[in-house]
Length: 81
Image: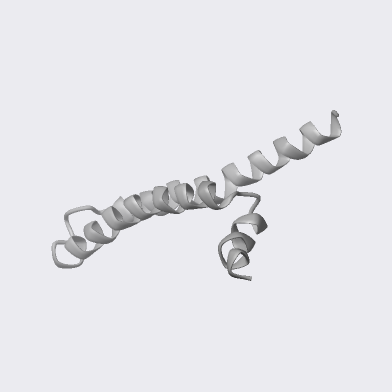
């Protein structure tokens, strides 16, 4: 039961616990930087004008587009066996 708390969600996105942790940590850094830039931008709107939007776009590509490509690659390799 306790193990499932750590493995069910990562498995639902075709990752191990460790892979999922690495992915989540890889998002945490850019999100933190973007949040700090957005906070500065709120008071000084001439700074970091596109940082939030650029970060969101990059992370979207990593999360959605790249995951789809990886999943399709795995499915294609399964079909070749």
